[in-house]
Length: 190
Image (cartoon, rainbow, N blue to C red; front, side):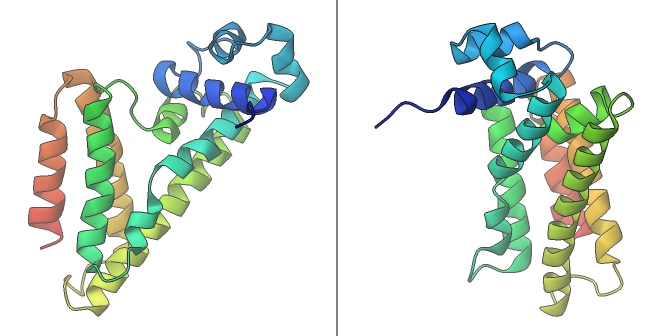
């Protein structure tokens, strides 16, 4: 198999560095060192660190396993739970250090970059829409209280997940994750 292009190597290294270290703690040198390329190579493929961060957000979306939300032959709430179980395993398996790249960028640099703020907003809106669709399917199947507003509930669940990730990183434990599952799946969505 052939070697990945330099651009691909740089983009993947930027994604990993941003996800692990954050935007502000990641420099171009960190990215090019992780990619194993000279610093000048970065600017042959990206005009700025911000441009590479925008691509990293797109790459991050590809890791969220949205396909679990549409798995055929599984009830909607089981699909929703499978999605968050996957995300929680990733959080625990990585030692509570990475969190959600969209949330991290939203908290770290959204006030300083209109483009990243817009990309993070679009990411959250798309994710909430997917969650809302699953909740509406659960209502249609009679598995969820019909009086719940699915859009509001989806936004709440996503916001609760983001807070869970922050608390898990601070606590370095799965206790916030366990609380998320208990409250969301055993109380709210019952």
